Every structure is written in C-alpha cells, then in structure tokens.
Length: 179
Figure 1: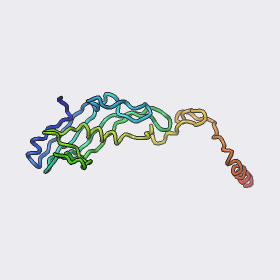
Figure 2 (figure 1 turned 180 degrees about the vertical axis):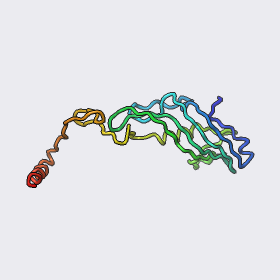
Figure 3 (figure 1 turned 30 degrees about the vertical axis):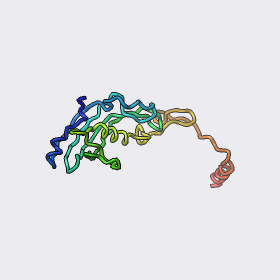
Figure 4 (figure 1 turned 135 degrees about the vertical axis):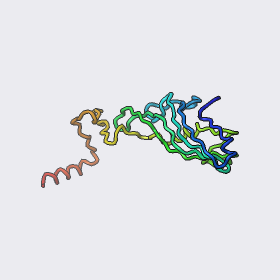
C-alpha cells in the first residue's frame, strides 16, 4: 500500500545526522480501523483529513519526528448540548527506534526502511480531544427546570428547595428581614 504515512528512512539512518521535511494531508482513518463514537463524545470527524507537518531527523539508533499534526474534531457542549466543531493542532516530538525493546513504551518502531506516522498521528490527536468541551467559555448552559438554553433566552425558574435545609433557610430569611 502506498500511504503518505509511510516515510522511507533508510538514507536518513545511513547518513547520521540528517533530516528531511515531511508535509502532507491524508485521511485520518486511512485503514478504517476506528468506529465512530456516540454523538455525546468528542471524536475526529468521519472522513477527516489529518495534516502532518514534521521534520524527520536521524540520530544514532533511530529517528526523531518533530512538528505538528492537525485534524478536525466534533463534540457536544457539556453545558448546553450544542454541537461543536474545531481543529486540533498538536505539537509532536517522538522517537522511532530500530529493534524497539518491549519495555520502551515511549517510542515507535522503525519497520524495515520505513517509519509509519499513522499511529503517532492517531495517538497525538486522540490524546488531545477535549473530554468535556464548551461551545464558549461563558456558556450559561440549560435551565435544569425548564430546559431553556440560557445563552439564547432567560426564564423565571427558581431552583427547588431541599427540605433538609428548610430550617436553615428559615433562619436566613429571619436574618435578612431584621436588617
């Protein structure tokens, strides 16, 4: 398969230190390995393209990849349930190692004369997806009583009083009226 995520590194590994710029856009889920998440979860948009702009540098025993990866995402605001779309741009600085030892969990393998950037791109983007996104920082959310979107309208709803605090509420009322 001729994938832009596969970067030939044989020459780089022979000429240490050396480097090459790698820039491309390609389908984020080129292999169709990810199932879409439920609408309430943040996820990369289906059929989205990832943008990769990195410098691939050789060092003794491996390759270092530095730069940025980007992909569009979608989610739902945690306060008002409005749909949100955005673009994640994530800085990357990763190692690819020949003969990767199993205990090295912070590096990716050099596979023959190639490195596969797909796993690094997926890891970087998935780790940066917002867990509880907001449509905007000052989102007022939904009224818990009537469900109106407080960003678009106001309501006269009052929160229900908890009967366990009724005695203290009565004391507070007496204190307010005596002033």
